[in-house]
Length: 305
Image 1 (cartoon, helix red, strand yellow):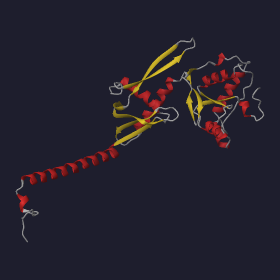
Image 2 (cartoon, rainbow, N blue to C red; image 1 turned 180 degrees about the horizontal axis):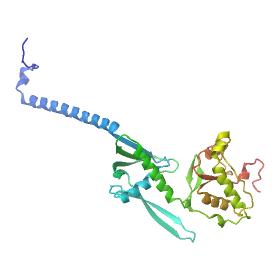
Image 3 (tube, rainbow, N blue to C red; image 1 turned 135 degrees about the horizontal axis):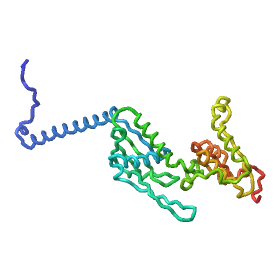
Image 4 (tube, rainbow, N blue to C red; image 1 turned 135 degrees about the vertical axis):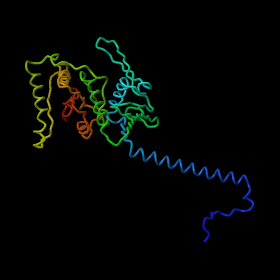
């Protein structure tokens, strides 16, 4: 056995002194080393993202998506971030009662990557917009917002979403949103309306107060229905000739309770039993369902009546 000797691979005598081969061999070793280093750094980055970072994805189909965009814009005004420097504009036109048109502009973070500081922690905000994928109902491109923070706790996202929801609800606390049913979903119909006061609808003495008190008692008795296995719902039948104030009272009742309104027309030619059941089971929270033309549910209804 020979100790201290180096192991070397024999090369053909024609290549031993060839400078081109030597240079190429060295470049090959260097390229292999760089490729290995690149793979190792990529694996290390993937490992760091899995164990050192936490990411939240909010898609445009989620109800919290507009809340997140509004909150990000508002937060950018109060802190040093790149969110307020790269923005998109949403132009909202509202027709006033006197016939004039009021136009306002709301700014949201534009697609791309942004940096935001929240509760002393840095958030990486990435708004992604897919031009090849669109919503078949609205025609809008599919979007999502990804929020990334250092650490493994989700508490920062929980606080973030709660604050975004409170901010969005505070902006609409004095308005009533009217929804209409489109296919399999409820969509806002126009801009949120100013809440109508209950005293603006003229009814017989004590009628409005009786209904309001009955609704409040029903809302506070949810546990009673659940304990007894009774469906938790309540309906009111309003009758009278057109223009007597049925829909107006519903709007005033919703304003008094702080609820929204979901309008569903039973005389819609495309309304089926399945679609009606699905619509009633997917209504937005804290909303009143207004069934227009309820007499259309009767088989012997005369269309001329």
